[in-house]
Amino acid sequence: MNPSWLCIACLSLATPALAESHYGPGVTDTEIRIGNTNPYSGNVSAAGQIGRAEAAYYQMINDQGGVNGRKITFLSLDDGYSPPKTVELTRQLVERDQVLLIAASLGTPTNLAIHRYLNQKQVPQLFVSSGDSRWADPQHFPWTMGWQPSYRIEGSVYAKHMLATVKDPKVAVLRQNDDLGLDFLNGFMQGLGPANQGIVIRIATYETTDPTVDSQVIELRGSGANVFFNIATQKFGALAIRKVGELDWHPTQYVISINASIGATIRPAGLANAQGIITADYKKDVTDPRWADDPEFVTWKAWMEKYNTAGNVADISNVIGYSIAFSVVQVLQMCGDDLTRENVMRQAESLHGLRVPMLLPGITLNTSPTDFRPIKSVHLQRFEGEHWVPFGELMTPDPD
Image (cartoon, rainbow, N blue to C red):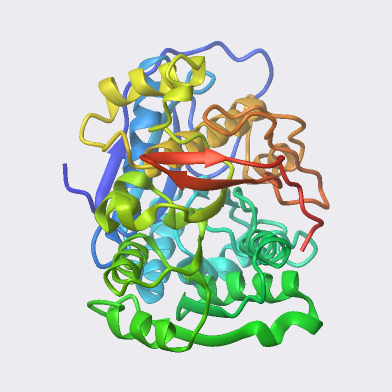
């Protein structure tokens, strides 16, 4: 399969309509067309596995009869994590391919590039695969909704935990030089509060085109910091963790949740280098033996074995793609035969206690016309041995 064009279009069983059908673009009696962009190539290509997992989930749904009798055609295009390419491909999906919605396109800078366009066109930008806080602004962008906890909330959680547990903290930060990195940093600073922001003594940035982050980590170690906040995507996060170990530097380390995949980040970084690292997450760690008999895990594992055989079972990307696609299907099912863009957003903003498989216990999706933040809770976790171990209580911070 060409990873730049994932198209799932299997026949499904027709279901008689009980009422008059209302269709928007991309919908017929037998089909729902969903658009998406992902980085299947380039330095952020590890995250492209999320799109492949989504495609595999929609394949399963089609094999089970589709959504209210309609097959899903999933058009997922490779933007290489390049915002100009994302704009070009999204216009193609909306204007040429006439998709009903754009669902779970990946990346902060890439989604920001299409944010205003999709709202002007009144096309749902649903369950954005990024935690930027700007996806939760229904007053100004009523066609855009996030999915995961916001980066600002997550960054604030790390700051508050550090202030409570680290004596005389001096913080060094590595961040991706884009809106993703900035949003996490702003949340961290917000969590510190004005009186404590001076404890951040060094910030180094990297570009997604850089070959390594070795020089940045060396610079951060030289600052004398005893806390390292690693705001990096998977490849660069792994490189940073490995370099910290090679330098025999032993700060308290925090890594962002999108950089916490054991298969894509921790194992490439070296398990020994990752011991004691802290993250905040909302998903089940599929390498943790405590989930071995969990019904959601058992079902997910069977899906991996049948529909996502090329996926690494230790890569959390396969959980994210599975869970987001589940959420999209739930919204489409709620639409019934009123499959218009307007109704997609109406249903998306009326989620109440929706349990999504593979999220941590106690976490559900909740939205309203004024609340476009479906997942609001996280759980702090520490890497021990070969997997993440949750500690403390489930945290639901104040809105950012």
